Image (tube, rainbow, N blue to C red; front, side):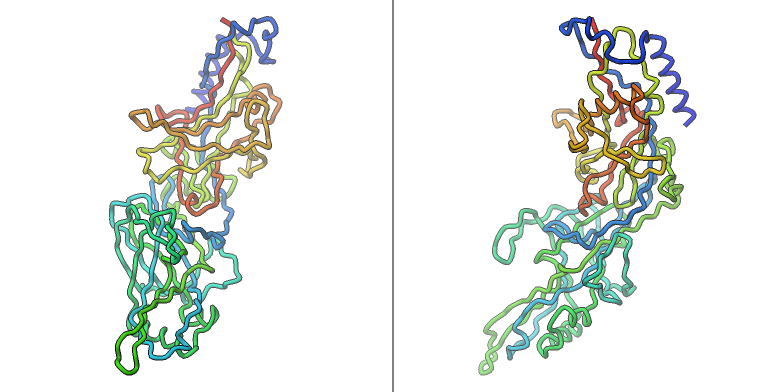
Length: 455
């Protein structure tokens, strides 16, 4: 921090040496011919960057889409620690003819997991385990990222796969799904499968209540040590699938083979487990704590699933003076350059938004966007990369012209700004955006002031 202060002091001294006016930034505009204006860029405004904690929990039992019902995986790095996710779900009852039909014979019972996407180390082995819950999920309860349910320590199934591009599949009606899926299938023990089949045929299982009494539910997790996340869906590719056939009493010939799908669709949630021990961010214990970017490799990470956000401050912006010959601030852009190696690094970064905050890092209000500071306007910025460049060139850009101008003029209190994500979808909660601070030679944060000058 002392280094940052010294750099900021040197920058301010340099500006003061070449400045000849202060106060109103539009002085001289009335007497300068607009045709003589030119625009010059300046990005030396000092910026402090740190990582802060948002300890609020969030609902994950309401997450359900064609893409994701629960998230399973692990992600770790030396700055943020380890994020582990587990998916919990109850098996839903599905209407079937088993109790009213005779001469039926069980073929097999298969536990199916269909996943819509995986990211991270998708070319290396990814282990998946399925454990049975000791207590069924409450179908009327709301579950959060911090929720957990006891489960058997011994796995029912374990499988190691290599995640990769999925293959297109169709729904039961034959309609192509918009996303390519892959499926992991586990065959149930014959004794357990027969017990379940018998409970269906003798009428012991007739609804969700009796289904929960039999199965209680499952948790899907990974013991893998690599950085991989997989989003599992609740469509017709995930659940229990029972295969059976009917035979002719007279000839013992199979006359019909069928299957019944019991989905994990109604009740499910994802548990997020964060472990920051042994990292610089272990110092984050309360909402008001902050860890400077100079302790985390000149960067700050946004990881919604770990409650991590980025805080930025402009400590000396209200001391800024226009250099000689400049008539005013034409535009102000806050540019964030994420630290990424390839476009497949942790998938496409999510949209980000900026908010004013207090000393406790609580969000107060949106930062006004644009030249007139339209508060009602969306304060989010999308991820952009330039495909024409030989090296990865990417950024987020916020137009904070009116807001920065008011800070310079002292018309607004100089509060911290919090950068966070805009979505609570499971696809984005585990993603991370790592932003370089101002001292990096590349992939850094800048406040770019475009000054109107008179030639």
